[in-house]
Image (cartoon, rainbow, N blue to C red; front, side, top):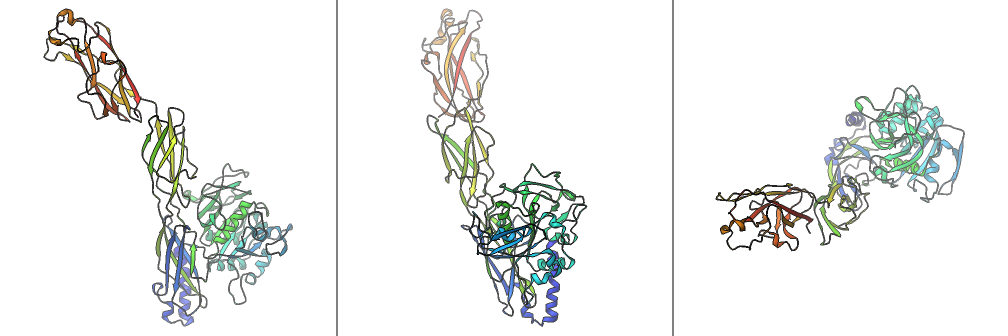
Length: 620
C-alpha cells in the first residue's frame, strides 16, 4: 500500500512534465537506459557501496535511495548523506539555556530548543558534541514557523534549506499544534523526500491530548492514535532492531542493549520499524500495554521510523536528556537525511544482520586421565540479502524516474566462537570470542557431569543460537539382578542359561569387567582344568565342584565396540579384575553368556547359587 501511494503521487508530476515543460521523450527515457545502479558488498567495512550513473544531462538531478532486505516486504528510503542540516522547530516556553558551541559561538535559547546545545556543544565523549560535527542545527519557534513556514524552509530560489526538521522537545509540545499552513508545508517537505523527526506528544489526537494538525502527518511514521488516553513508559529503553540507526555516527549497541533516558512514555501505536522499546517493569504511572485491532502495532515503542520520518519520545522531561538519549537523537537525525546530489553512497544500513548457523558438535574426547577435554564443532556464517533502486528528481521540472532494482548480499564471515563450560543446562555465552578454532581444549570441571555451551559469532557481531552439550560422567548401566541356569544330564545339551543383557545408558563408552565370581551355596568352585574329562566324573566328583565361566555372548549384539577377552573367565582367573569388553554410549546393548564345566553323575537334584560381580568403568 505504501508503494502504491508513492506511485500515485509521482505519476501526476511526470504528467506535468510532459504537458508543460516541453521535455523531449529522450529526457524521460526508461530508467534502464538513463539511470543505472551498482551495489557492491564490502564485508570488512560491513556496508554496501552504491554507485549510480545518470545519462540524462538536460538538467541537474537529486537522488533518493531505496532499500529492502531479504527480511523485509517493502522498500523504504534510506540515508544518503554524510552530514545533516537540521531545523529545530520548538514550542515557546519560558525557561532558557545558555551554551557555547564547538565553533566558539554562544547562544541563549528556550530550553525547549536544546537540540542545538546537544548536537553542537563539546562533551566528554566528543569535542564537537553529540552531532560529531556532522549535524548542524538552526532554530525557530513554532509560532514563527506557523506564521510563515516557507520563510524558514526555503531559500530565495524555492529550494529547501534543510535535510531534516525536528519538532521538539517539551512535554505535550507545550500544547502548541501546527497551523494548517505549516501542516501543508511540512507535508510537502516530507513528500519531497526530506526527513522529519517528531518529538514527544506531537502526533496524537485522543481524549487526553489533541494535536489534530500534527496528527494529519502521523501516517508518514505509520503511527495511529489510541482513542482513549493510554500511556506506557519508564526511564529505561531497550534496543529492539539493529541497523544504521543504532551504530552511526554513534554505536548505540546490539539488540537487547539497555539505555537510560529521562522518564517518558508513549501515547500512540507504532506499526513501522520499532528501534527501541520501553524496558519492563514499566515505571511510568498507569502504564498499560496496547495494540491495534488484530493485535498489530504496539505502544511499547520509544523510537519508531518509516522511510524518511520518525517519532521519538524525547521531550516529556522538558528539555532534559541523558547522554544515551542525545546519542540516539543524533543517530536518528543522521538517519533521516536522505536526499543527495552525489552519485555514490556507502550504505551502512545495509549490514550483515544474519547470524551464523548454530554450531554442530562432531565429538568430545579426553586425555587418558580425563583431566582435559577437547570438543570439536563447526558453523558457517549466513549472508543478508538486499535489493536497491535509486530515484532521480529533476531540479528544474520535478520529473522523477527510477533505476532498475539491483540485488546483492553481504556476509562478514566467521569471527569465532563464544564458549562456556559449567554445570547449568541453559547458559548463554555473552558473545565474547573464546577461540577462533573449530576445536576447544578445556580442563575438566569438578563434579560428575557438566555442560558445554557454544555460540558462533560473525565479524558483524551477530551471535548464533546456542548449542548446549551435556557431558555426564555418572555411569548408568542396566542388567538383570538374577538369572537361572540348569544342568540336565539326560539332555543332549545338558547346560542351558539365558544371555545376560547389559545396556549402557551413559553418554560415554563403558568398560565391562569381571570383579568376582564364586559359588555361595549348594556346591563348591572348581577350576576348569581340575579334570581332563568332565564327562566321566564319579558321583562324588560331580557333587564336589563346578567350573562356571562368563564370556562375551555368541549373539553379542551391536553394542560392543571392543572385546578384551575372547575366552571365558572362571573363578581361578580372578587374581585381579578381568576386562571383558567395552560397550558404546547412549543405550548400546551387549550380551554376556554363561558357560560351565561339570560332571553328569548326579544322585539327586541340587540347588546351586553363584554370585557374579561386574565392574563398569568409564572407557578411556
